[in-house]
Length: 205
Image (cartoon, one colour):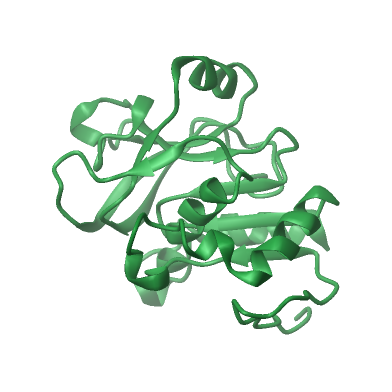
């Protein structure tokens, strides 16, 4: 179904004609200096930025989210987790905006289970930036409990306002720390992440 994805090396300087750019998770450059800081200056990122400015959708997951903030495509920073420990477990997210390329197969307020695996997932932005994100509906996902309540106990990393994922002003760039691909099929133990990919297929086909 559809087209095969194109794999692009970080030292490449050109992108094929695509509908979506995915910047995946991992540990680019071993997370030395600051997570995503070095990768944001990889040659291919110049073309990623240019493509995003032309309206190509961009998804950044975990380290990909860190890279997008370091590259200036998304506001804020991802800092060390509040407890200074790597966290790897399933968490619950509340869908805050279901009217995007990435979330149209979810419902606003829906609670989903998605894994996290990071050491630097503590999202921070100044108060003016936070108010802008909230006011413009650009918080995509928020850490919560099984009932949808967002509090300190449901926050795995100390992120400001329990923010787990944000959008750019066009809502065509999404950065999120949790890994929807890790729960996208029942054989993986759950499929709450599948709707994110189905959303993109529906919106971009």
